[in-house]
Image (cartoon, rainbow, N blue to C red; front, side, top):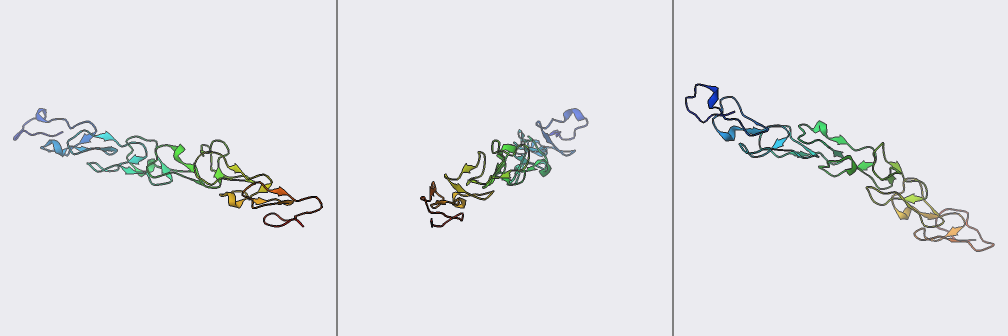
Length: 190
């Protein structure tokens, strides 16, 4: 509350600060009203809640702070960094994220369901697949007759399997009859 009345002798002369703001005892002006923790706005004006993905740990007109990258917060009017939740392993989120689905699995990892790590860490792409982007969606299969190690993050990790030749970036071709290739990767049929 605040009072503009000089020499006031009773509490009835005090005016109420706008919603979600407070003032010190003995305040004499509307601009003495400061937004509460978790709210932002000019001194003496309407205060609005900090949106999801942010928090504000001080009273006053300061801006809300974003949760850092790789964290998210689904709380409105959050008052502490403690409301920011770290993304699960092998996933990332941009600064100021307000939903756990913003945590997308990194290159070479997926949750093998929808690409969102809803129930645990993101897992490496299976052998023979790769994922060259972060976020939702499954890993992509290597071209026909090509293999890749678990957790591959690029099609360049795909190599032609034994008995097949090519660059691994497109379908690998079988060695002709009476020839063989006994290694994975670059090689020729003998």
